[in-house]
Amino acid sequence: MMQALRYYSFPNMVVEIESMELLHMLRDVPMSNALLFIKEKIETLNLRLSHTLREANGAADLLAKQGARISQCVYFDCFSSLPRAISTVISLDKLVPFIRVQ
Image (cartoon, rainbow, N blue to C red):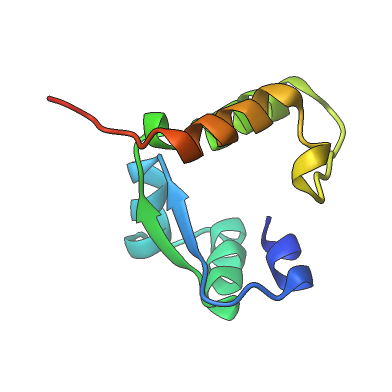
């Protein structure tokens, strides 16, 4: 993802993460080399991290689940190249906002 952001020159992006643990690790915990590399890329690209609920970002959740099932790298360079299930979730997300009631 970070390589794509750099390639397409998207400045000042907000990256929403559903894992509070990962967010805490990237912000506050002394890091291993792998996490340090990621944190440096985040700072270089001027990304801002924020927490979101899984239900609020169905497309990312679905992409992650599909990505976990495949062994090769797949790039989607435009909306029309996305799998139908994901483009449907994105379209629905535009129509109906996520509201969580407790």
